[in-house]
Each structure stands twice: as C-alpha cells, then as structure tokens.
Length: 114
Length: 111
Image 1: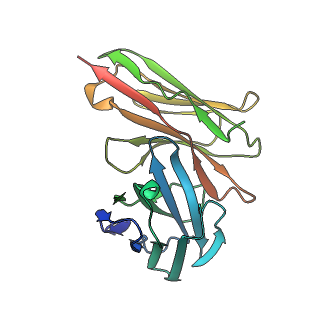
Image 2: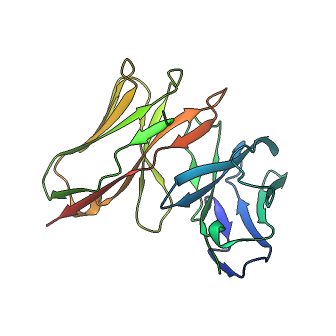
C-alpha cells in the first residue's frame, strides 16, 4: 500500500478563496482523521470519520470549514472563505480501529493564505 | 488540565547522552499510549506503543505510570539522527477512538 496520500502538498491562496484539501486513506482502515498543526497550538483534531460517517466535528474551528467522506477511499476538507489565520499544515491520518492503534499520517498539505 | 501535556523543551544534549521526556494525561480510562516522532517538515510517525507498564526497543524505553498518569520516553546513547520532536499520544473520547497528541518535546543532539 502506498500509505495515506494527500494533495496538494503545498497550497498558496488569497484570502477569501475556497481551498479544498484531499486525502486517500490506507485501504481497509475504518477511521480517518483530519488534523491541523501550527507552532502555537500543535496538532489539533478537526474531525474524524468512522466507516465514512463523521463522528466528531467539534474541533472544526468555524462554519467556514467542512469535511466530507463520500466513500472509503476519499475525503476532502474544504475552507470557504479562507483567511490568513488558516495558514497551517493540515494532516490526514487513518487507522484500522481508531485511537488504540497506530495512526498513519499523510505527508500533509502546507497551506498559506495571503 | 490539558488532556495531554509535554514539556516543549528544547532538550539540547551531546551525542551519547541519555535523555528522558515525560508526558502527563488526564483520561484515567486510557489503556494504550504511544510515542510518535516528527522530523522537521515531515509527518508524525509511530516510534513506540505502550500497552502495559512499559516497552523497550533498542536504545528507546517507554514507561507507564498509571497511578500518576504519566508516560516517559528514555533515549540512551543519543545519536545526531535522534534530533526531532517527540509527540506523546493518548487515545481520548468515549470509546478512546481519538488519538490526542501532546504539543511535542523538541530534542536536539549535537556533536
């Protein structure tokens, strides 16, 4: 397996624009997590899915953020409209059975909003 | 109290030194614990799992103290290549399904 695949690796956008981040989890993993990492706050969980169903989105900072998982092999995180304070590294991770097993991370998307 | 707390460091040590990091957690129901390593501008990767009182893997030893709710990571004979950020992870949530990360401890090993 190629591991968790995220795209794009880098994104630079202007304030107010829509940004879509993509993730392909490892096949067979039932859990998918979206994290945001900043120097100030470390790794924060935004939302997680179990079997494609969103379970906990309490970490999503505002209504500007939304996430979907239309099938077991694809998830998106969308920010609309984007703001400079959204600049961060966004990681997608998947795991077979949730928090009690290893989480495998993608390489992340480095987002810069100018 | 934060769910998972770590000393951010940085810990600056010479090659060959022994260094230890601590991590405290708030969820007394957690049963499994993890240490991840994150290199600069890379993704976190699993270093060690801790399911009982402790685990040892070569130069790395992780220990768990349930009574005091902390886990530790000991690195012996530090190498330059050990320079990284070490993240403590404790599952949280109703079913312990959420890997919750500490802020990480930065280690710098110098010649």
